[in-house]
Image (cartoon, rainbow, N blue to C red; front, side, top):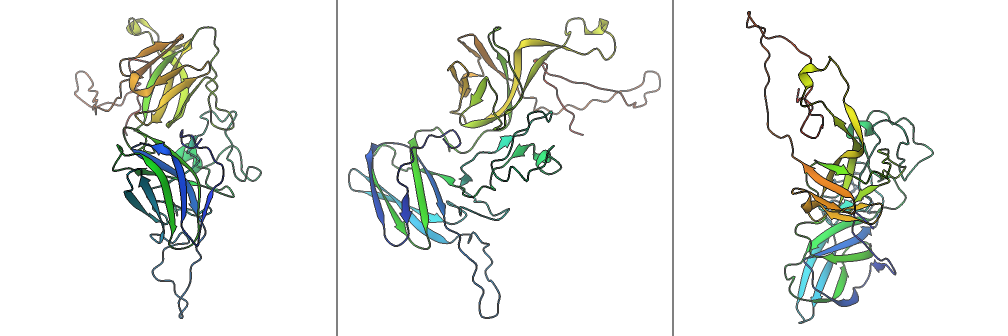
Length: 336
């Protein structure tokens, strides 16, 4: 499983000196997602000891090979595979990622409270806790420091109505290793997630919900396939009806079986619950309930509002202590 996309890896294709043709069951699909990696291409200085053009160790833009879809009517469609565009090297320096492919291990969040902090897959012994400045600013772990990293590249088939019966891999320069292939009919590019959103989750009262992340950045009751869960926290219950009568700095209550989930996901993604219940992301806007789980989208707060507090009698602008939250109790942070 990579980025929520299933792969069955058997005998990888080692592509170097000659073309390789692989027969597959006749498949009609809009998207073909390749799990692959290239070799490390060393930099070669000229007679003056200079490297020009400087493409980096990943040899940016170098034509590595061609992937060819062979349809059942005998026609073909060819895709050009370039280094650091459609494929990356199995080991690379910081900052030398791809423009059209992603590392096969998707980014995952850090814990907000520092308890049960997720651990990186590479160099666990040398990793320092608590997580310090840098990774903490992004609030995520990117597992690209492992001994071997594969890349995912999604190719859009221009003839999804035709059945593909074989693929031909043609070498051009260096070595490629193709480990897996997955096909599907996603509505849009399957590796491109939407912007951050929030959802309200109510789960059966008999279940206890732990908002903490395990060492793999996973929650114990809910996960998402084509996307990533960012945070999950108990929904705060504010005294909306009689808040004017409450004392200053009164802390809100919490509900034991209601959670606010923050996530980013593809439009075809689905949430998966501990009992096997599955709810599609596109069903969240109207809200849905299955097997005791209720999941509903929280409307985004994307409208800019400027607040100015004026002192009565003087018309002077005065500073105030301000807290703003949404209808579901979600905290709305100021922009400055």
